[in-house]
Image (cartoon, rainbow, N blue to C red; front, side):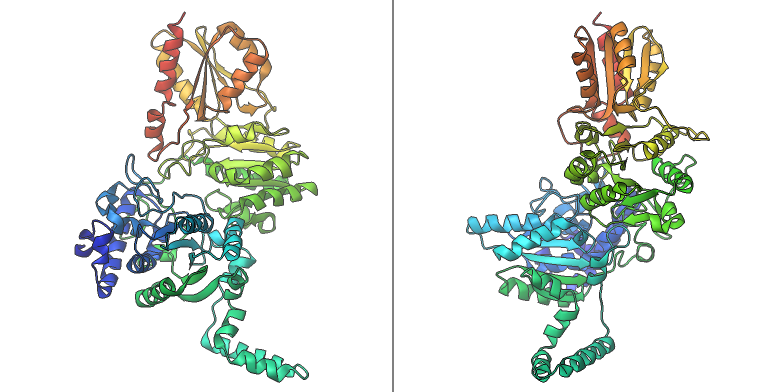
Length: 626
């Protein structure tokens, strides 16, 4: 990797000649495959964007010119040629470099990203700021066709076309987001035309124009003068031209010479919004990723020669798998049940449901706001939608949950996968805010399971509940507890005492329950005995049980894998204060006022002091305050 190892900064890359770039692209792919095979990461999307990355860096002057990667999981090549090759082995590792673009990490990262469809809006903002600062440098926003299924992208384009500020948008079209793209817009963007088909269509269109009485021949001659205008009429350019963008493409996103030439032309001539449409292959250069880009979108460690995951198959299922299995079982007995997701059918465990009930499965694309309001519409007419979205992504639909679901108390189920600390994807992906943003909403019920069996029971409870209800569960494997059949629903708002003790009270929710039980075992060896309550519900709380136990034990710890502000512990404190219990000693275990960085879940729980040892330490402190 002689070429790649010579690049310590952007200026080193700029010294390369154009004929050296194909070899550099090969070396970059080798480096990405090697590191991701060991660390895990977003492989297919970064492999598909290598030539595009090199062309952008060859033509533009970073960081003077600003480059924004939408989502950022396709930016590994960008990291390698901006001085991070020597850190690349730490990709997504604890205290290593991020798997996404991050302003604090490198000046060539134009915007901190992690969620989709933000690049055009951010790019336009930066472009306007440059205009106000009399800075004539360029802004380049790279957005995938999957991200173009979100309304935010078009809100940005709408204003960009109105303001007519200098902005270059590159549409990286690989017919994929994470899973296969869905929707009419995706079909429109993905149109390709062979020369034969285009000629046939042109002849048919010409014959139609000629057939128009009196004016047909004149219109035909005008249209015939410009083949490009005809192509624009039948290809996606028509859409972008309607937003006042100059449209170029689609072009092959792996042809470096063509990419460099057209980008150089755009750079030197564009003084208003431009959209360059490039087509790429997700997973380019690594056969297993090309054949299975969905699996290799976000992958764990694997063997490079086979593409197969490292390690033996785990016997304990993930929470996502338990959820998916229970959805299928409930679908058999509840014909009104449907599943809704936002471009994540595999990630949310819904593929079996999709295959079993194709007419009752809806993938709306990367459009969380639409998913929620669409589900409210379904609920109005007696359908029971289960909206299955990662906790961090459901944040994008806050207003729709509040306004379109909760005001009229529509029976919509929200299944929040990846609740809590997610791991190596970092602050943009941790699901640490859902209790706080759901709890204040009138008519909303919020719950979190302590194990797999309770997840199945909560989903059954949710499907039978006549109102908005959310269940939040973590990423990763369960505790090994089997799902008891038949699956019985829970009584709304009822907690459970797991074990009794006379020294203090630990009230925990979700994954915090396991940490509380481990802490109790530690404390018991020291002669400190705790009562542990599995709260099950964040809203409504089991007021009778919690008030009675708190009044008797006085020393109380709450445990949650969530931010402290507005979370479960806050709800418990409010309950105590509202009922006049002011003589209590309460310690809340949760995430302080900060964003959690990336790293293994267990390491982060220890660092941010929400594990069993942190609970035990708090218990010792309270016990010693007698």
